Structure formats: C-alpha cells, structure tokens
Image (cartoon, rainbow over all chains, first blue to last red; front, top):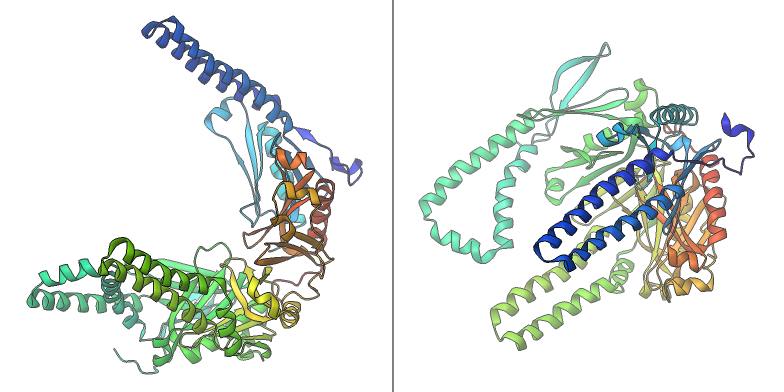
Length: 162
Length: 447
C-alpha cells in the first residue's frame, strides 16, 4: 500500500491532474469568448460603437472565471489512507469528506462525451447515505480505474452492513 | 365474497432449489378492500370540493346514476377479485416472495437478513373482519412492501416466522419457534398522553387559528359562506389532528423481546411494529418547550428503509433513557453537552446557545433548538461518512460544522464547533465509526 510508508495521521494528498482545469478553462473561453464577440459586434453595429463597451461584461466574467476555476481546481485534493478515503475541496465554502472503505456500497467511474474527449473520468463513491457526496472529478482514466479497483478491493476486505 | 375465517388455500408448489415452496394467497376479504377504492375516490372528491360535486350530482338523473353504479360496482369487484386471485406469497429459507399483478406482473423477493422492520397493522374495519396487514421494511425500497390482508393469527405466525428466519434460526425449526416472549418496558397512560397533547404548541396554534381566522374573515367580507368554508375545515383539522394523534398513540406499549423492539399502539386502528436488534440508526430525543417543566420527552427512531418512526410519544426523561439503553445497548445519554464557543453567536445569534455536542465511546450526541430542544444520538457503528463544511463567514469566526451521515439516509450535524475541534472530530469520528463496527451484532442476530 502506498500509504503504508506514511504515518497514520498524516494523509498523503494527491491533487487533480491539469487536464480538468484545461477542459474547464477551454469551455469557459469558448462560451464567454463567443458571447463577448457576439455582444460587441451586434451592439457595435446595431446601436453604435459606444454600446459595444457592454462586451466588457462577459469579458470580465471570463477573466474572473479563469482565476476562479484555477483556485477551485487547486483546492480539490484526495488522500487514500489505510482505512478511509479523504476528499477535500472548495475555496470559500470548504468541505472535507471522510468515507471509511467498509461503508462503500458502490464505486462508479463515469465519463461524459466532452470528458472522454479530454481523457478524463470521474470516480464517485456511494454509501448507504445519499448525503455522502464523495466524487473525485477529472481523473486520468487509468488512475480512475486503479482507484476504483483499489477502493472496491478495500471495501470488500473491510465490508460491513448497515 | 365470504368473510369467513377460511384458511388461504395452498397453491400448486413451485420448485425452487429442489425444494417445494408453499405458495399462499391473501385472505378472501381482500377483494372487498379493492372494491372500496372507486367509492372512496368519489367520496374523497365530494369532501374535497363539495360545491362542484353537488353541481355535478344535480345534473345526473336517477337512471344514469343507477346504470353508473351497475357498471362501476361489478367492475370494481371484478378488479378486486382478479388482483386477489393473482397475488401469491411464499416464504423460503432466505426470502419472502410476493408475486402479484394482472397486467403488469411483479415479483418481489425480499431478503430476510436485510429486513429492517416488520409491522402488523389493523385498521378498524380490518379488526372487525379479523384480518391484518403485514408491512416489511427493506433498505432501498421507496415504500414498504405489504401483505394486505391476511388473517390475524396468520399475520402473527408469519411475523414470528419471518423474524425467526431473519434471526438465523435453522429453516426447519423456524416456523416452530413461535412468538418470542415480550417484556414490557413502557406503557403510556392515556391521561399523560392527553396532557402532553394539550401542552403541544401545534395543538394551540391550530386551535388559535381556527378561533381567530373566521371572525377576521367576517369583518373583512361579511359573507357567512366564506366564514363557514374556511372556519369549518380549520376547526375540523385542528380537532382531527389532536384527536387523531391521541387515538394513534393510545395505549402505547414498548416491549423488549429477543426479536427486537415491539411497539404496540392505537385505539381504533391497532399497529404492532417490530424493529429487530441493531437496526436503529439514530435516536432523536425531542423536548418541547411546554414539556420541560414536567421533564417529559418524545423519542423518535431512524431506521434504514423507513421514515422516522416514533418510539415513545411521551415519557419522563429517566424512563425514556432506560428504554433508549435497551434500544442502543451500552449507550448512556450524555448529561452535559458543551456549547460552541461564544463567537459562534456572530454566525447564529441566540440560537447558538441551543447547539451542543458530546462524544462518548459509543455514540455521538448533537443537540439543536432553543425552545424545542432536539438531541440526536448516532451510534458510531452506524456512521456512513463524516463531512466538515465551513463557509467564509464561519472561517472568519474560526468555527465549522461537522455532518455525520447515517444509513437511514439522514444527516446529523454538530453545528458551529471550534475549527480545530471540528477538524480533530472529523478524523476521530471516522476512526470511531470504523472500530465501532467491530463489536456490532451480526445481521442474523441469533445465528
């Protein structure tokens, strides 16, 4: 086990691969860039050049979103400890989740069409409580599958009912 | 349709695992229940919208009415008969199988070792007919699977058999084990129950609304009809709610048996609930404002697969705690629950004083509510995941919330704890929930 070398109470944190950030930023630039251009051109041509300044609105949103996505991406991290999985995320609204392996009912790897194009996959853990919100987004598919296999293996070894 | 105490016939056996499975039908009065359905729908419509119902009724002539009934009643009876005819159930070594449906066939196999609770309920009419309804709670199902109706004695025998099999008794002896002996833990006297309802805020609130709203409406509209149309349902609602609660909780008895917890209650509609050992996920102790002087509490249970159910409608705190000690073995209700730090008051003014948290070696206890205090006890073994959340304002105040998710799909929150304490609690609780599991009882508690 990788975590075996580290002391029990000091989790070895792993961040998310940069692919997720790239995908999110690209989507942001595509959509808001399109919106900026459309607003600027339409208002500039139809209502006069002064009105074209409204295009700055989506542009600032774009720049702000660029920074926010980066901060949010950096805040995501997870750690596999000997007996439980830790997931920590959020910049302003922080949330940290601990799921003991024995409580897992199901591990899911999902990947949408856009995510597949960027070579990303999500790992989601389900326990008997629906409130357990344990999802790790934007993993490398190989890493996602490794994590899934390891989690279900550990879950089986430490399995417990309700 | 005869309503005699006929033994449900034994249907042709079905081969399952090389062993004959005895398939049975429900009690022959069951079709009558189905036949009632259209009548109750019409009656419900009439009550819900009396004005329009009357208008429609006056339009109908006697002949159309008669022909309508002549078609409706046989059709309903036929539907009732067919749905009864096509419903079978059987008990195998590990499952209860229900086969039902005329057009849309449905076969449910219920694993007995995952059984969360068994209820035998008897509405008033069913008591008259000597039949009962058997309800089963299973995790993951949205609603309870039920066998309605089977004869009263059969319901009891079947419940005993299901629980014996769920407990892990050998299959050959399971139907001979019989009813487990019950030791009575608590009985709620009717006087105490009535007084507790009188001292409930909701009773007074609805009564006050019923007394205040009609005069206000009279001054506003001077229309007697509006006053009646609003006042009568309000008053009726207030009365039925209180009386309904009284009748539902009448003769409330909690008993302890090897099968688990027995809860029997009801004046007209009797219900007998059984919660097998180790199924309770959370216990809530609720203390309404007006009960505090008398030292009374109300106790609710969270069981996986069913909605929150009442364990004790009203009892003195000390008595309730002894019952809780039986429900969650080895648990004592913590006496003092430390409050969050003072600065939490800047996040939730005044109400922060109602928050409290204590962790013993068996449970996590979290309290909230200032006027109506509610204390939730979660055994460590039932914790599914632990979460810590902290918004920007809470970060500034150096406080955080810790959420504990249980298998009953409910979350208990320790609110506004000191940030360092919360972080330590997060990891400690995860460890405790893991180790708390080790000495938990097995699913088949008699095996």
